[in-house]
Image (cartoon, rainbow, N blue to C red; front, side, top):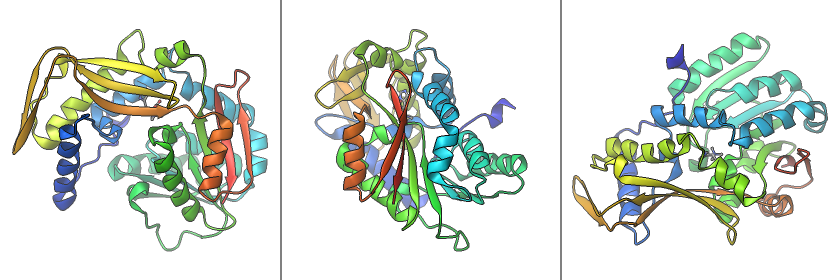
Length: 320
Ligand code: AVJ
């Protein structure tokens, strides 16, 4: 059913809700306004992201999938059989199904901020792989995570596909990778997908597609913010901008005011001049040696990586 198809909507409650409102309004009021990319993923945003992964210009998802298939045996050999697979931001668990089958994994723990959506996905995973002890854990790995006490501490594999690590600047990425290393514990490992630098035109098309799906995805964050903080952004008054920043080696996404905007929310507001921007996302494109350096900084030891023939994307295995 299409209604099953998506949504990892985070529904903060109580104090968490107040903290999230504060976080959003502080960022909107900063001299350079921004909205965290984690707010892209309400129900509509998750649907739009799924549509992005099927766009001809968005090479990431299909390149990673092809890479995982093509080098499946070598990857499984490096990882080793009988693993306890832990996936932060598991969402639909689609990528985990193939991996767990290939590894004859004993356990799977999907972690997502949207526990509801995850529960359904984990139930389908259990049905597909009856030998697998599969669990859903609601939570955010960046906020420190507690796993059920009966999940084995040995032979853990943290699986972080999709180049989601690209949303974090290098110091944040090192901190997050270090958390993943702590989760994997001694003897465990990380298997992670990373998008690599490539011709600028290819990158910019992937984040500004001809059909306008990424533009709709970017503007939708304003509708989500409206529902979270009670603001009155008019998404139609904001233009999608996506460009490669070669100094930082990242795609940046912004929303640019088409004309002067007065935005209000309970307790505050901000005026934006025509052409003023709200920064909504960074998507880093690390050269592979720079990325393995980040892994080393986070305490990981030996790494092994696989890239596609064009050198556009890498899957990296690193020992905790
Ligand atoms: C989910 C963070 C990997 O950066 O490519 C896609 C999000 N933003 N199109 C990415 C995204 C615009 C995506 N990640």
